[in-house]
Image (tube, rainbow, N blue to C red; front, side, top):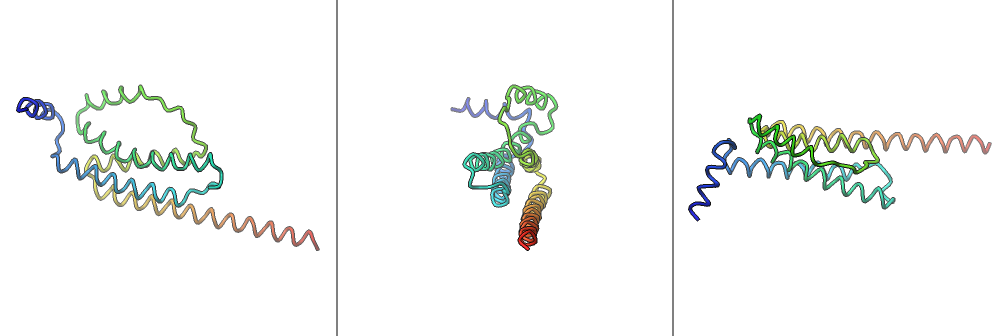
Length: 167
């Protein structure tokens, strides 16, 4: 058993510069911010929620946002400031191919932002992570209300056109 602890200790000597407590804090913050971000995403999803295909995509992306926040944090904890590890990780991740078609282009941006949340947590940039997450949630809510307003105005125009056609 002592040998196992020795192997673990020597394996992290050349790399991870963060304490185990800091790693847990970074991953926990990434989890919390990822939950907040994915929840706001779900609340502000604009497409018709009655369509089963779109509903399934929305749920899939919601969980993806959460997992990418945590994954992004973990990647930066592992890479830290080691250039060799960064290139090795980039090579390993290039083997993964995503062939899932995302029907809403804005979802792609939301996925990238989830990675940025994780990166800032993994690099212990707590203020940037928290402020950035809440700012992005604010932007998502703002876009949601703007689109709702545009939808109402469009319906009002249709109603007024219908009323003028009847006269």
